[in-house]
Image (tube, rainbow, N blue to C red; front, side, top):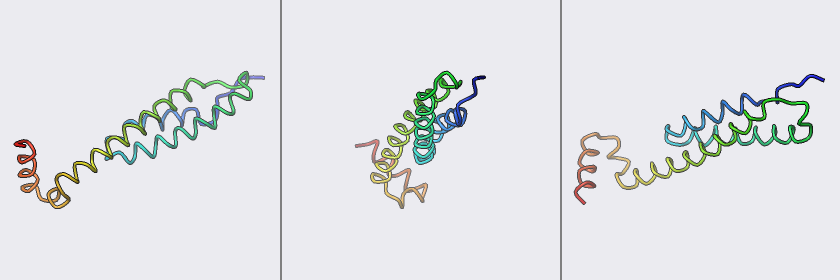
Length: 110
């Protein structure tokens, strides 16, 4: 029997890459794509472990899972940083550039 690609191996890799890139967008897309990558990787790993001689592309699955985990961690860290920053500066200051500059100067002088 000819070996075939694992289902969703490439999709797992793409989702892992998107999770790392998406963590820069306030963290939320990185978390979502990372969780999807981890779930797809878990399903593909389970399938591969049952019959490893029938499938190719397990390296893509592993790489996607690792990048998904990194993306989730970075996304959570970035979201926590944004929550802290908004807590320090205030929502009103984020909507007014002059008030934001004053808050930033106050934070630097402390």
